[in-house]
Length: 138
Image (cartoon, rainbow, N blue to C red; front, side, top):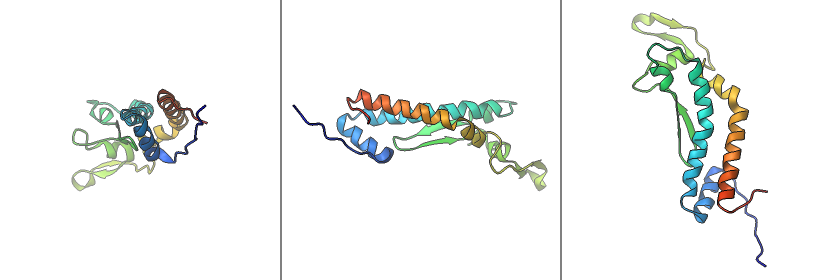
């Protein structure tokens, strides 16, 4: 009878490293799990963005690596998105004014509103990945 030695994992980087030792494709699954969880926030944030052309809402995207996840907005196609979200003064002689809100109107409120659901989704995805690797979580 073989003894099973438990391993402790501290953070995504350590989990990715240990999963890679089991199967080289498993760290890719971490990235996909992070994107799946972040997509919950993306959908919620896009819902509130005002639409003329839809470019500002479409600019909100989830991007991840195997050890981190980011949600970005704006970019070259919608450089005005930060102004829409946070407000301020822009334009020639600061003619376009929008009240400043430190936590923003769309992205951060979506993060606050969906945090519990994101955590549950990510935990479930991690548990599935670990189980697919033939390991168990205690």
